[in-house]
Image (cartoon, rainbow, N blue to C red; front, side, top):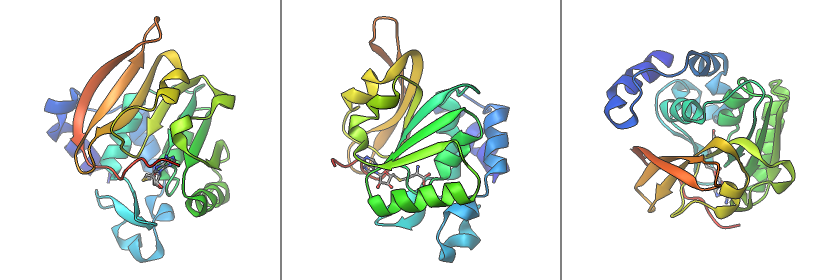
Length: 209
Ligand code: SAH
């Protein structure tokens, strides 16, 4: 799977501007068993570079996209990261290997509960999951050293920009229902964001709670 990620990184370098991903990110991808995060009937496909169904019409993202979004966040060991769209918990697990603490919000209560249980039973003990509307962020733990949104909306929720630390990154797919652009926003000293368009992508919708 990691070889495929490396290959796809090279193939998309014209868009993303990166022909290699951070070695720490690739090591985290290697250390998390994706099969633990997919449904029983999907185990055989766990290491294929494609999204897979996780119930409720939602998907676990494609491994390459998980790796790319993690790399774009530029995570550091002491960081506190916010994720919107816990889903299976796979992206949270990858981040949990790289940073101090991951807060993750999932709108579907059953998915949130299952992901929290799965992460705890696999020993990812620096991840906290709550069932809520991620559009509002998680003010209690802000500011965050990075925010990653794994569902797509027409625009960036303002609360997330507010809750981002200065100098740090928010990675989010922005666009219409079936076609979006993966964007990276960096908050500057004035509290405004600089926007980079990284890659055309297709995510499930970021819904309103
Ligand atoms: N990161 C996940 C991918 C999940 S797909 C993984 O690694 O498996 C996107 C998820 O976002 C879905 O589970 C969906 O229910 C959730 N979602 C959609 N709108 C949301 C919102 N407003 N707040 C929180 N989660 C939301």
